[in-house]
Image (cartoon, rainbow, N blue to C red; front, side):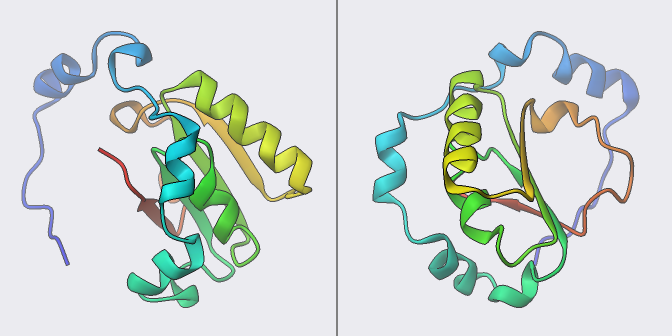
Length: 129
């Protein structure tokens, strides 16, 4: 378990979060998702289904939505956030084709979250750099 032990001063935070989302990250090609573990197996390594069951989940760095879509059937809702607009487009398409209704995907970066406090019960990062 990690413990947050500090807080950046607001002027430091502004320096670290300036620039466009495109400056933050880029998605690894979608074929890389096929090389990753099954989302439920991966979740098992973090404590299992109880971690997300009936909870509001944020998947930071969701890429093409592999993990978000994989745990959606357990969660009450899942939001996926990634700086790569092509990856988000792919995630939305997969969700639509799969009929998964409790998942939303948005382009954005962890450094600039725009969610109100307490929006989520759990935040996950799977294969995120």
